[in-house]
Image (tube, rainbow, N blue to C red; front, top):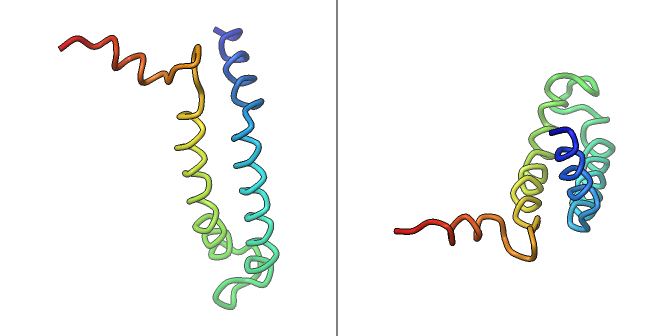
Length: 91
């Protein structure tokens, strides 16, 4: 089981799309932190719970997009994984 986990993790981390989404998320997170959160949100102190909530609300759409896009890009033997499952179902 550990060998399979390492294989899947290595396959995900060497994916080009993963690096692209990671760079965009890190860049946008940095811009959000330096542009809004460090100054405080709604006249609160920097890194207060409100500022952290604002940061999460700004970063969460990109993180969710990454969760949606990366699994669809993973292929097994050149075919989509869900397509293989759909072909095996007989109605």
